[in-house]
Length: 428
Image (cartoon, rainbow, N blue to C red; front, side, top):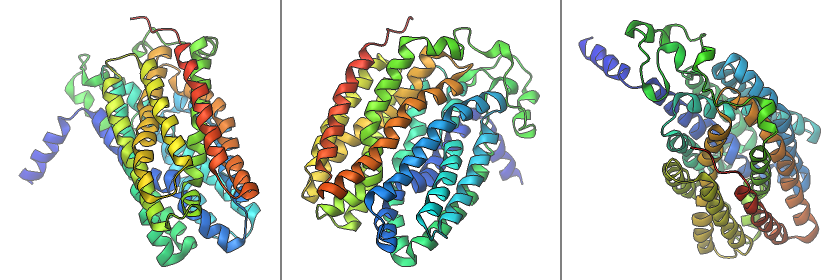
């Protein structure tokens, strides 16, 4: 009992924001890995089972992007109104239900419907809510902390080889059932840890005290329903939604994120079928998913660390250049060893955008309406995310090769780079 009390006391000395980061990290690692990077492993088994074309299956991912784009502003608005935890828990429950129903798929229309349901859940459970919470709880090293948070997805590539093994052992239907159970068992307890803002619990961002008695801070665990910060806690520099969308910065970020997202959306869906089409074994392709997310840690942590020290606009441009080079190599892969430079360049490049993008949004627009503004910016990305998977599948169905579409996506990354330099420098 004494030992337990001492552990509890030591845990209580840790700023609660770090528990939020830890909970979000493991949600990204386990739940996010299954649905974000793991679904490419289902592509060929489902296609072989039903005889569906690459374009038909890819349409499901485009419907997911369409749903995400439609829901993102609403989710952002609801987060600003009711807090992050309720949104996350709702999303976990719906995600598990979507996976469970998908395991019963017997028609293309039912497959699409369950994919949309899964997408609604993951948009809530694994979307902007976690970044909103971290943006509220940390200020001085916000980009660095977001980089740490995003490494959950960076490590989640382990889902690739694990799901390849599960599908080989139990089939794709039973694997989806297993995923649903894991989603609920892991996601719900972790989601309960998340809190929206620090101010109701006597903290300022980064763990600074504002003079509230220590016994009031204990309410963090006793009154989880209290999530919204008082109005005076919001930084005065925060822009309203109307003000934000009238700025050039808002639209430059939309264009940059949308155009660089084309390659990510296409590769994320077609990575495994593409690699197997050029002679890479399914097992090696599964490990490539792990390698991609693993190398992204360089970008997530490295750029997250320097993002608090240097101009984020230039860092975004550097990350885009690395993505461009990686996609070009990806287009010409014909031997397993060529995966290494692709993983290093592309993984680092797309990983760098994960902490930089939400952090620069907080820098320019503030936190009061951060979730709503984030949701609105996703609308632009949505169109590209809808187009990319279906277009890549169609190109393969027609020409029997993915190479032309990868080259086209590399070009769009180059087109995106100038937009980041049109963002006005942040006033210090």
